[in-house]
Amino acid sequence: MNPLAMMMFLTSLAIGTTITLSSHHWLLAWIGLEINTLALLPIMTKTPHPRAIEAATKYFLTQATASALMLFSCLMNAMQAGEWDINTPSNLMTNSLSIAIMMKLGLAPMHFWLPEVLQGISLVTGLILSTWQKIPPMILLFQISHNINLSLTVILGLTSVLIGGWGGIGQTQIRKIMAFSSIGHLGWIIIILKLNPQLSLFNFILYTIMTTAMFLSMIMLSATKMSQISTSWTKNPALTTTTMLVLLSLAGLPPLTGFPPKLLIIMELIKQNMFISATLIMLASLLTLFFYLRLTYIIALTLSPNTHNSTIWRTPTKPWLVFSIINTMALTLLPLTPAILLT
Image 1 (spheres, rainbow, N blue to C red):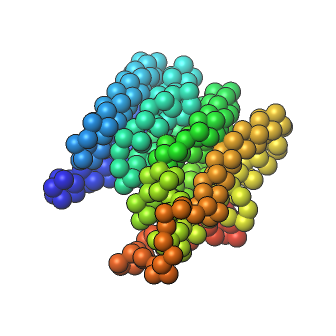
Image 2 (image 1 turned 90 degrees about the horizontal axis):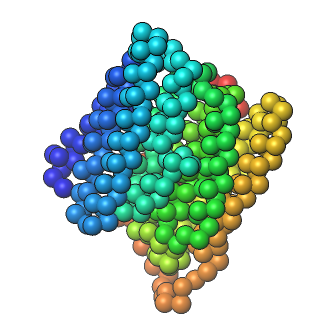
């Protein structure tokens, strides 16, 4: 793709996100989301492959449906309340608006588009879709969290964690595994949204850091399948080791970065006397733990028979400072958790 065109599309992504984040008006927030969607479509199809075209079509149709439902909800709210202010949604439109935003995020049971879309696009575009594109809808959910239906968030959160684990078990494509991982993590974020929005925001920030680190590792290893990742040890042992640790961090194992949000969410659910929800989400998260450990086993404890015994490590030609910082943050933020939550 022409670098000038790519710069224009990335700038449009940033502008759309900024408009949504800075707006107090539902129509402006909706316009920002639409700019985001339309800017990502050409990036998805920069390699004119049938899978990429199919993924872009599915993404467009899903986002258009969610946008139509969101605009309908905003119009209903404007008819009832006589204003378009984001902080004053009526009870009638909050449920439909929440469902529309959750469809944009890819929460279960509106998740069917996400694995197929991620599988059909490149790793770099998948990184944008899994992190940057989730920021505007998530911020809108935070803004209406005081009016959101608690039963809706708990049911969709539990469903997302269950489907995120269940769907990822039989996958061999890393992009699909990351899609189901995203669905599971969003379930953890949503289930606590009504009770403690600050904790949800903290979890979302850590999810973004860990997912970015994982996608950057896959980009540097040029791996999209488990069979490719099993031969990565002889190419770059240091990067393969950090990739394995990032996977364990995504699984939520201590003492890595992914552990504190899960611990704090379980504690918050118990504090709110939601013992059944806490038990169910812990049991459902064991499914996700299984496929993370499966990937870790393939990386660390198996060696492909066609690898050579060369001791020359093929490292990147130039150091990638951003990658090093993101990887470090994805592994070592546990001791800083109290300081982060107090700020």
